[in-house]
Length: 392
Image 1: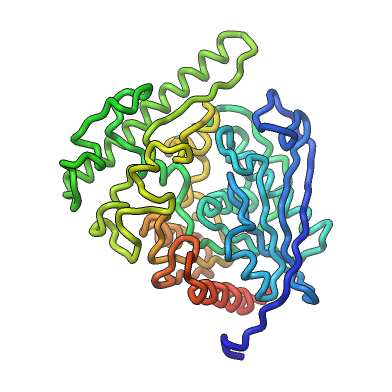
Image 2: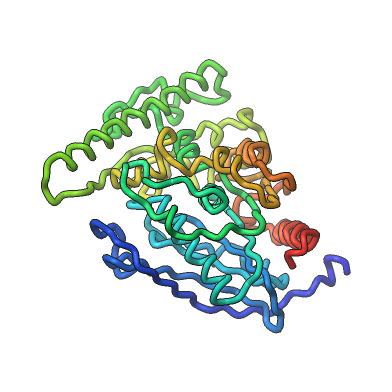
């Protein structure tokens, strides 16, 4: 059967609700989803009409829902059962703890196998879901994390995590923390006033234009990491003060300004690929740099350590990939305007799987916007790979 005659199944969607008991010292999620003592999770399951399956493909992002992405629905239209799973922090990562999201993903996989009766689960890590899925699978194969980076007990060791049977890493980055270290604006001198900046490190200053020299990039990257470490030192100091005070204040939120200053957005000679220059998946990068939805714009102390500090996070993709043994397919989008060009290859190289494949989809942007033919190509790639491994 050629691609032109490949069947497109009509699909149905169903709301999924999973809840489980979990003790908590304080409430960290707005609304009912994080009610003290119980975690409530919501997802959407896409089912192709008239198609039974013993395999479920799960897409999950730490901080958003993925049912509006083209890939999950296209996979369902190709005949696969697909779950788009939301974490307890869906659409708000201010207080997100990666270790808790691992437990959330484990609850979905347990439900899929014990309630729905699926025999196989394929984890599909897209964008920020890539490092989450890597952390989950590495801990499901060999659980080891007992505490969050802030020192709080977590439930990974007692959650009974069930490993997935295969892994797809697509349009995904090494980790939220590593990406943040590449994007944060090192020109900021005063964390409380983003207008106080070092013009020699401000890539949006009119006197600082690409191409950027190797010497500048080394100084820029060092300054980015130094800024994060200064912020992390303040976070740890503040958290220690709260703990030693003996009062009832247990957590604190804060704002980090100017976090979208990635030179690769402006310089086509840095890790060249097919990405557009002068823009990014958030639009104009200079506008996004201090906009309301930049990485780590709003954060709590504990969340900073868990998801944004590269020195502290457990969700470092390369470290996690080294603990994964299941078959793994890594897919790079060569015009990705969100994921830095080297990240997919870094994960592919680090993976301990003996059955690992890496493929680049030429010209694909992050979301396949205006690219239905490339979306079809990605679906065929995933479905053929799964069928070759008897997962369809």
